[in-house]
Length: 143
Image (tube, rainbow, N blue to C red; front, side, top):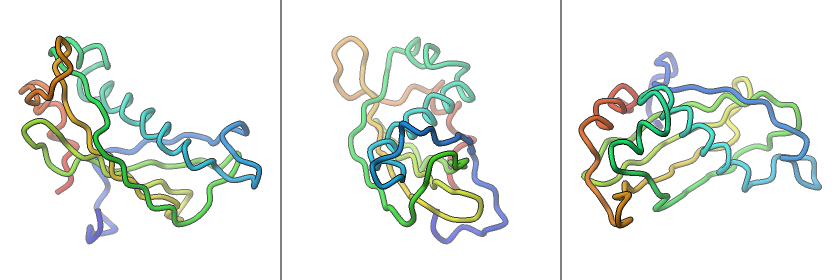
């Protein structure tokens, strides 16, 4: 998302409030919880693009995490409202990368890139992204 115009809205946005149990002894969001937040966002993406996560599974595929990169720039704290926004960096044959930014107001807290690999539900081997999924995700591609 680097280099994007600040006036151009990201293709996907979701807000959540940080709960007390998601913070560590320093009073900031425990780093591993950001990956849990990514999972919440992905569930919402399936809801928006396919109707539900079950609709994804009906295509005969699921996704597994192939790679994660997170850059922690500023701390989030209990009761902060996080705006998580971004989209997909293209659709490959069997994988795609979800690029997200976690913001509190105008402050950028975390950037994450999560590569998802599509797998066949029968054998858990890599599988091509079904056309129905491609069509659903197309509006969430970063331009």
